[in-house]
Length: 292
Ligand code: ADP
Ligand code: MG
Image 1 (cartoon, rainbow, N blue to C red):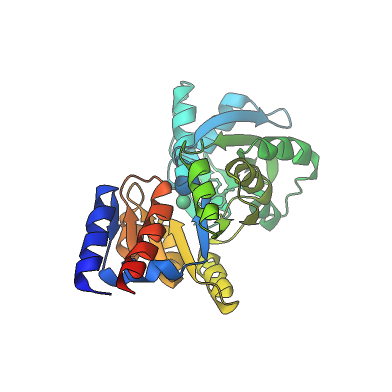
Image 2 (image 1 turned 90 degrees about the horizontal axis):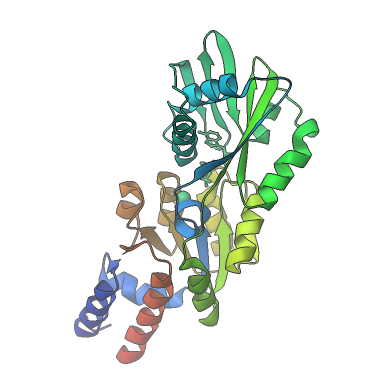
């Protein structure tokens, strides 16, 4: 590509809040045939809200929320922030916890008032030998509504369910349609459970989903697609998306996301609006056409 056509292309892109790290990415983006979108903070707003609290086995709701809040207070996960503010909004004060531990992709644990608390997904409960069969119906109902349901247990007893909902960005449906109109194959990738992911995917018009992908597994998924001959753009906002952004042919970060994602990515969408992806790819195709 000529330096002039690239400069013209990236100048135009910048007007749309699309920042290319180097001219080679403006050239490279036209080869992409597959776009992998992270769910939380990329397709959705990344501002989850606590929506449901269900207590189990005679547990007192306030005691349950105090325990859950104490554990989540130590976590920096967006889910944890949503849970903690939802609990505080209910006028419940949050106490201290000890021996806090993160189990990435699964949840968190800590000691609260001498009791052993765990909060996380089914896989976390399974790790602690807890059967979730009796609450499966309740979990499924929440997940089919597009919510992320998490389970709390105290001293190896199921204590309750909490669910959060993260609204879909207004622009996501249009953004996916535009990518598909360019002939691109669009996939959603998330650590969240398959049912929640499928609900969100259906709303935005995505038919392929990689769900329950552990943080370290995201980059592997990108490499698998590449091994099958795909040229992949990965779009994400989180620290745990960074390895996948680096592995992709083109990494695209949300300007609204973590610094690590932006540092790793080739392109940043300053406005966090996914319609920027199709604009970037269309511009790249245009730039390459002007050169030929
Ligand atoms: P995502 O791609 O959604 O950021 P993660 O790998 O961070 O996925 O998390 C996957 C799943 O692990 C979440 O959907 C949730 O069920 C569980 N989880 C992670 N962190 C927490 C937490 N702090 N509290 C409860 N559950 C958690
Ligand atoms: Mg994310």
